[in-house]
Image 1: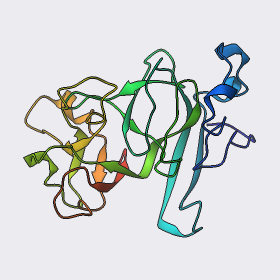
Image 2 (image 1 turned 180 degrees about the vertical axis):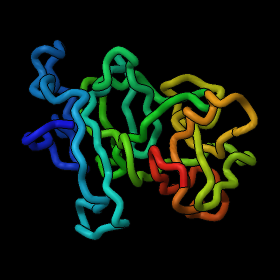
Image 3 (image 1 turned 120 degrees about the vertical axis):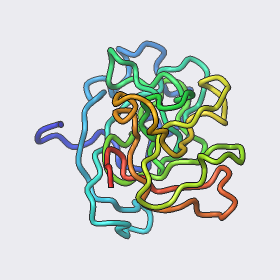
Image 4 (image 1 turned 30 degrees about the horizontal axis):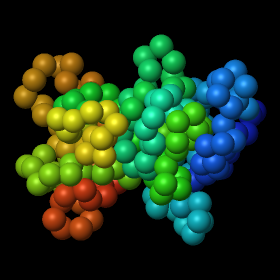
Length: 203
């Protein structure tokens, strides 16, 4: 956690405001480098309405989109470079793969390559259910959720989704749980719907 240091951006914003032309080609020339991988604890508050959703704290981590071509969209589960906690490499694509959701409040157009933004390391965050009508979308509050298998590339819009956790495997599977659902899918049909998840939570 960053001590006595303000976050480089406000939640819901991007470091370079999504303007690709403003992002230096070399990472060493980007103004956010010293902040990468650092975390801050904030309130679970909508930055536009200023209303609190819950009384739970949210741990946000500052990262950059390290993929060469894809744009990271809000609410999608991102994979983190295991050697660099501040670098996102794409969307999570396989069942129980580790992932952290991109900030739900960032611009809908997402974070282009090289852009700096927040992922949610712990606490309430909105995630997306699978793009197909599958049984793992049958999520109810309190149920554990994990990355859903997409069957497509890390850049595909059907990747980065959540589903009910498969708890039939080894103990290692439990460590891949993204968190516990705080809500059921919002739209009723369960396909590509929003679910609020307590990231890192178990109940």
